[in-house]
Length: 426
Image: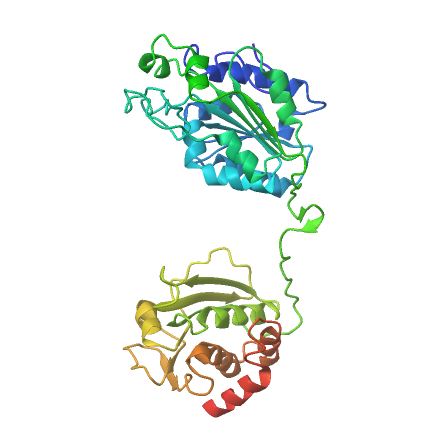
């Protein structure tokens, strides 16, 4: 028979699986919540047996990667920031241990959601291997003599992390009242429903009852609450700002650009390439232009190349990829090597090159200057970017100087210092 929130007819699970029992209890529990429209419910699942329950729901559903359902739900909850919306995560014990850090972070921040962990003590979909929640003594495909050590106590972990509500119970009988209680929690709630997999758990543990295995292993029913857990919304923690607000760049200067410019800034790590590109981007935006910036550098971050790609356009930018560049600003060997393929593909525009470098073969114009001397290697890319604005004139220098003044590097490199260095280039 079809319910208000999900179809309880033709549940997709194995006969005797606790997933079906919990699903039916959820329908009843949700029905007891006041004025909850099915479209005010968001169900998030991932890989695993329980993950296929999403197709039974008549609500919004999101199906993600293994262990990532809580991370997805966190984004949804914080994006909505609406307590009238109910967000429920369905995840197995395998997914819960794969995505354990996501669960702990959501619990720590007390994100508004309910996480239902279907703990059948093994990986049911892939043959019955043990998970991080498999209790001591429980036999699985790869542990035929039973697990030797204690499994992770998930309820204790999330409670320690700060969850408002954590409860472990056996998936037996009518558990709808407990689920209803969890759904009503203001903040993060987790219910661990301990189940017996009828396909693998019973086969490897014949003749055993659920409570015999769990009680021996210390996996007992439990309720843990944090009554003073902070309330998290999309913008605030207990009324205080959670994130630094994004600074709006207002269009206050004019420009002389017709169409778009695609360019790269290339140098060495630690020499301000990304900062210079950001200043150029902010300056262009202050002239009412559309801008995209992509930065790339090796895993080591502090050594090797640093390259930034910029698109600056009078029109909206729908795609951030660059097939051909109109300008290349290069200050080091590392940067030249990394950007060489794009430079060799240039057919017009200008290559701005530091005098310490040998110009590569290119069909475009090459301008060479000693950018590393006036303010030192760490400011070479900034000086090169400022000189690019000055020479091309596509935006006024005043826009670049104002972006510099508002940046974190303005104290180390004030406007007067940059103006003096620009004069030394010419």
